[in-house]
Length: 438
Image (tube, rainbow, N blue to C red; front, side, top):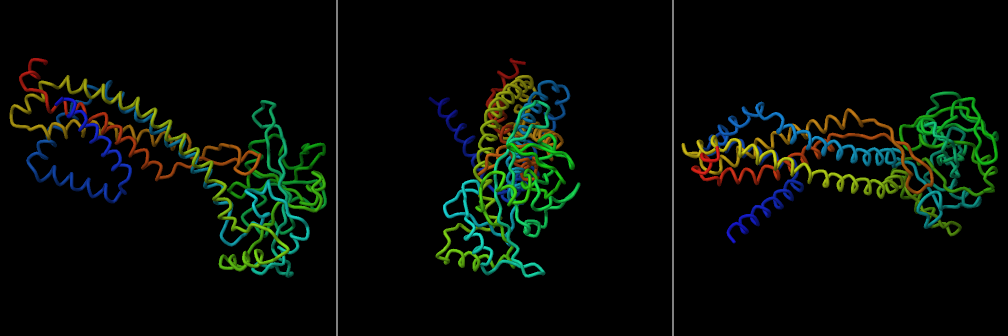
């Protein structure tokens, strides 16, 4: 019964520690670390813990094989976790950076995305005349009625398979609405002709998208006149003249959305109120920043859940690896530990010494895993089905400092769990028994 209660208390300590470790902000954790250092410097038990730790760490080269099991195992967990989470960050950033607070997207009321929206010609004219829209030098409103359709193109990986790409028919003001979109090769398409320009991400993913080449979309041939880059989700699209795209895909004069550049972010409220108050219109009005951020939420959350589940599964294996290694280390150092206790070291310094040794190995594993993830995947190009569309979206994985900190926290948590039980065993080992075991 006593042993069961002791085990239950230890389990509760582990759970409480993990929850606190995950929930506490870094300033609080830093303050706790400072208090711990002061305890080691100013108290007799702390100084004993420091001495025992230095003895344990000095013997690590003699146990490099078993110690490397802990380091490599934890490094693998951190590398996989950070890489998966970097995918979600990259996807979210690609979509979020596609919008801004001073541009608006107007779709049919109740539409979750552009694909499910239809705006008729009269509504498009009324939207372009709404107050709050910026105008160019000739006085034309900077608004672009646009049409989004999905098309199939052969992939560039040589497999012969086809993938889905988003073809966007744009108005003449599309370049003014999105000034970040720049032609980096070739030229823009000419309105009225079956020409298009391709984003850098689309060119990377699909075959035949070189300036001057022709591609088949549906039953018609189109000429690729140029390549553009925006540094966001737009890079995954093909752009052509909206009237030509509508004619090719039999959409008549309807469009899926209207993008508008506002006179400023403060003009959005008046712009939205004017459209909502127009009895001729039933539309949904959002800033492009809000629209693309919402589009990324579901996929980003799904990627994050997958990353955490995979990380937990791998962490369980790493914990058992740490437990085996540290139990073996404690058994191998039984005489040393017994000697320390015989000359006056109490249980707490022994527990702290074993925990610090495990946490040091875990920290090394966390740093190694973070570096591996950053070297291998930071900036790595990937693609997935874009939210709200039937087309692929290219994006780059982004290993941020926040993700590296998350990886370090996971590594230290694994080290804490893996070191706690061997540390308690070392502290409770009777001196006479320990000397006989050696």
